[in-house]
Image 1 (cartoon, rainbow, N blue to C red):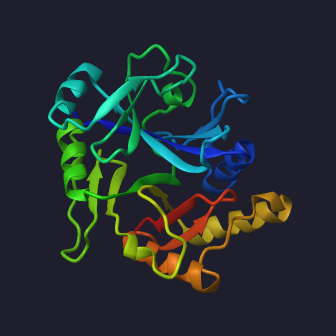
Image 2 (image 1 turned 135 degrees about the horizontal axis):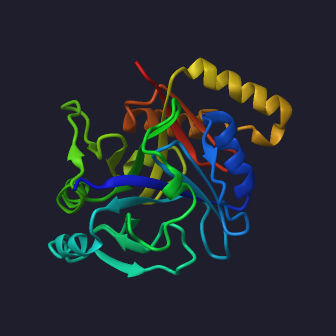
Length: 269
């Protein structure tokens, strides 16, 4: 304690291209022990970004996050205080998903500890020091945000960070990366496509947004397939962007990767 938010996972039917996008735009590093048939994993030195191939019946997009703990057995004991939380053992082929669990609202996440035998690739190569362009947070939408904040605080030791009095979110940090818990209300989606509860977006902190935009322009000029999806065009997308700005007050710029995963970017002060 406290635990460490050590990976974020995306599901994509063009997973190799999406890995190239995060390498080119956010300078994430690819593992030398990559498993290209199963997934492509890149990292910022602290957090791994795992891009998994989409399979039949599995939705694409931001899928889950992972937490590393000192002891999974002690974690399971603390989870007993939250009866709706549960976990299952994962196949040995997963390099850092030894255990998958759900919180009391049904949000899925992975649990592992440093000594697990299936740790491999970027998850053991990360030095612990984040690069200039780094994952700052991962956000989820959930029905009972106060209870979920207690769950992640009590079970994993994530520390609640201060927010504005008018901000309904919870911000739970491991000291470097935050889990942002956003209250879900269906009325938030009036005038746009309705989203269910679940993962919302991934956040990056960068040294310069102008520099990132320049790298993006250069990359798309060379490879148009890396063009991100516009956010904010037309009435429905404008409503989605306005909601994202309200729900992610730390974001200075919002975009979507080429496979529609929403990204919040903030510039380090």
